[in-house]
Image 1 (tube, one colour):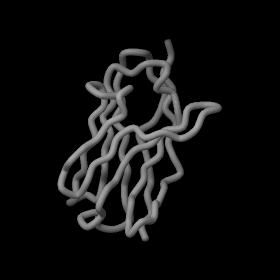
Image 2 (cartoon, rainbow, N blue to C red):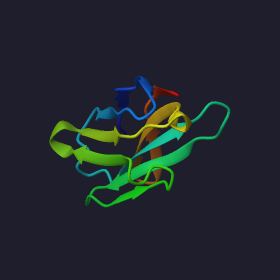
Image 3 (cartoon, helix red, strand yellow):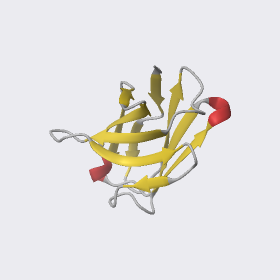
Image 4 (cartoon, helix red, strand yellow):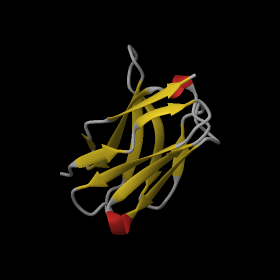
Length: 115
């Protein structure tokens, strides 16, 4: 098991940047994959970006070239750098850890992008 806490959300103007952090309660070194998902108002949760233990990454088409996911195993933290933000990026952003076919979620952090 792992407990995840997201931070870094907030209100930003279109074109701005934010960096989200996901702090884990234990070492993430052995966690196969960690990712960021988001849930826009009135919509389903969707994948934003995933990073494996080996450092491979995968992004939703809508954020490619603007968002970057990274992990710092020494700090037990996963980051999501978000640049060139758009109003359609407005959502609650959740951190996810995949451990032995189970998903562990944080409580989310709100990102609001104004036009």
